[in-house]
Every structure is written in structure tokens, then in C-alpha cells.
Image (cartoon, rainbow, N blue to C red; front, side, top):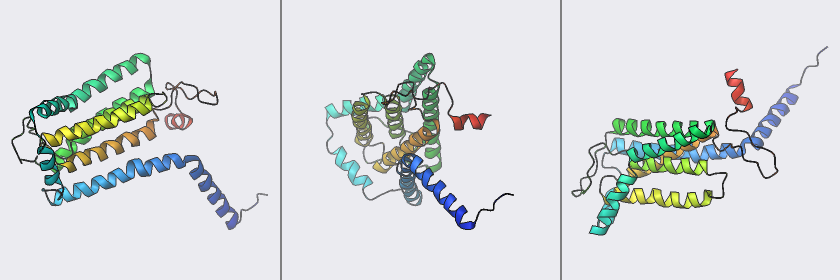
Length: 253
């Protein structure tokens, strides 16, 4: 004869399950909150404000004018060069080259991550621009004018996407701190050049950062591209990139 569980026992079992789940997954949940939810909330605030008022935020124009006040021939050359280096077309070529290398190395998990966030970033950028229809600033004649819509910044999305790719691929190496430092400088430099050239409001760039960060982190939580064949500190081998996790095997079985 089967025993019947009492309500308080079921409650304790549920509480125990939730507690164990939170203990086991607290890092992923915290990353989901800080890396995905909060950036999307910031983007929502920016998008609603721009939708309601095309002029954007009070700090948009003053910031542009402050950056423009530093204009000189040397910075003109630097800004145009950075704009070309950080363009979505250049980012696509770089991502394609990385994907080809991963394909030859048969690193399927990393390859899936690179292809997913690269393709998604392009779609997100194009869709956002077409939905928002925000015109670019016209405070002065830019030396590198743009004809497409401004919100969100495609250069900002591309810079975050590329840094995320390099950071994820180098996560298990001693180079990750260096990648983070130089990646941060690269992201800031690309943002500066867009402001210097007068083709984006600061809110366009911030929106691009938020969208790309949320997308890159969200995809990483699903694909888990940081799992490599390298050995961990306790000498136990990690999951190989060419194998599925137990929960992934259940989905396809």
C-alpha cells in the first residue's frame, strides 16, 4: 500500500527542489538578470523615448557638440579609419573568417555561437532601424555621411558582437583579460568615431550596446560556447565541443 504524502511534506520537497536549483544555477540566473534583462530594460526605455520624441534625450545634442568641438585634421583621418574598421561589413568578414577557422578545427559549439550571434546581430540591427525610422543628426556636414536610419547603431552592435566572440573563444586562455581590456577600448573607440563624425546620437550607440550585449550573453547561456576540450583545474576533462550535453540529448531524442 502506497503511502500518501502530507501537504507539508510536499511543500518541503518543493522548497528543497527550488533551493537546490537556485544553488546549482545561481550564476546563470544572475548572468541572465544582469546580462540580458537589465540591458533589454535600458533599451526599452531608450526606444520608447525615441519613439515618442524623435529628438531623443536632452544629453544627445550637447554630447555631440562637445565631441565635435575637438575636430582637427588628424582626428578626421582617425575617425574615418575607425568607421571603416568597425563597419558591419568589416565585422561580417571577420566573423566569417573566424567561422571558417572553427569549421576547419571542427569546433562545432563555438562555430554555432559565432554564426548565431553574427547572423542575429545583423537581423537585430536592420530590424531596429526599419522599425524606429530615426533620422541621423544633422548638426554639421559630416565628412563620412550615412544614408540609413540611426537607431540602433550598427557599428555599436558590430563592435560588441566581435568583442563577445573573441572573449568567448579566449575565455579558457590566459588572454581573456587582455582581450577584455583591448575589446573595451575598441568598443569605446568605435563609439567615439560615430559621435565625432556626427552620424549618431549617443542614445543610438547606447541602444546598440544594450541590444548586442543582451543577445550575445543570452545566446551564450543556451549554446554554452565556453565548454572546451581543455582540462579543468581538478584535472577532470570538460565537455567536448563536438558532444551534446545531457539536457541537449533529451531534446533531440
